[in-house]
Length: 266
Image 1 (cartoon, one colour):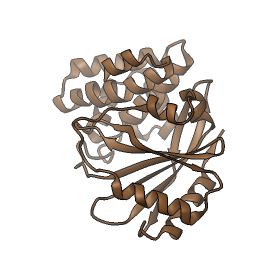
Image 2 (image 1 turned 60 degrees about the vertical axis):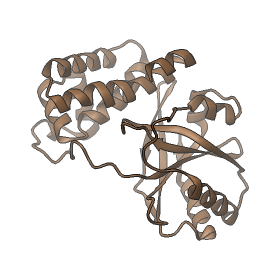
Image 3 (image 1 turned 180 degrees about the vertical axis):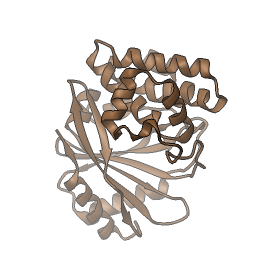
Image 4 (image 1 turned 135 degrees about the vertical axis):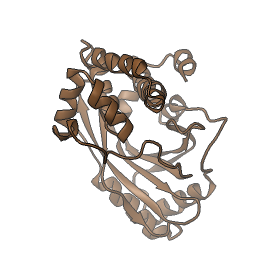
């Protein structure tokens, strides 16, 4: 992952947004929590303080989003955070969830939830087009990669047309692990018209879609984006809307268009 980011020469915001969640959080921090390695955990929280105290506004925002979310995402991570977090991270978490986390015992979530194979898609309404990409879990379950197949539809597409296209895509997408998976955001951005990452994510309306491999149900997530500073955007999904059978093209497409209608970006 580190090698891929280096050779692709991503903009700094993209580099940080890839490496912090997928290397720092999902590997170094998570492995240290599992192993109970207090020395590595102390280093993790020291690095978080450096990031949160950086003069680089974009870096501060990215660390705040990814580390702030991960710090209380499971019982084991929360215990480590309660014991070792520095003042900047504590203040960030207080602002995010209130102060009760400091004394809370358990109830944050399981440390290693059982993985489930899912079909994932992300859709964007950007400059008069609907743009879609597939998602796959990385083989070690450390994150979700932007992958092919990609899809494009005009913004005036009707519900039935949308439902047919997305149902066809869902039926062809693989699920679960993929040992050969490559995270390809730069290819998707080229598919989107050669646009840069920051502009695309700032201007696009976004929804997410996932379903299980053993049923025709799907969950639709409407995304609300908030800009912080000049280069970073946080994502807040709504509670998902259940689509009982994505083979019903008209109903499926109607739900998708309604989800886009609720999506926001500022």
